[in-house]
Length: 189
Image (cartoon, one colour):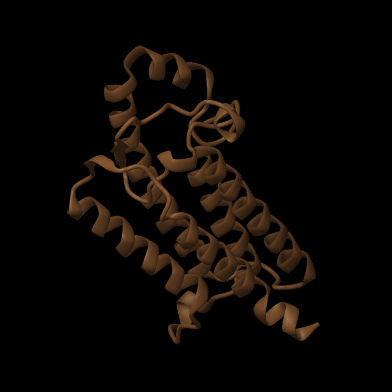
């Protein structure tokens, strides 16, 4: 059972990242790409969040325990993490060749509004935020909460840019879509 506690989150995240990398190759050509500085800022935030959540740090206040680190927190965190990652995979599959890790406009870009995109406009961001939240919940330390907040801020920044580009690309069609479908949390946000 100790192996499960030591490696479950590592296995979940590594499997997700391998899948993500394998699927990254079959996409449409990029017509418009966000500025390099924007990408660099987001990648830096992502790396910092991963370090906070995944690397034991020898800074006392970062390791301060916020709630009991027991079976309940561990399994609740594992379920939330796995559900978030599966939501990302569903969204990625549904996007098909329109997907990109960066904010882009693809050649022949299509507005996808079915599947997970009928629930929220940015299901990959929703899934990632839930996955980081689940991992932070299981970790039960200040560094986990900071990592979750950092990735949330980075994704909200990316969301704002993507929303602007989608409105410019799809006009009234995107306006109508955004008026009926929440950005991140169905029927709420």
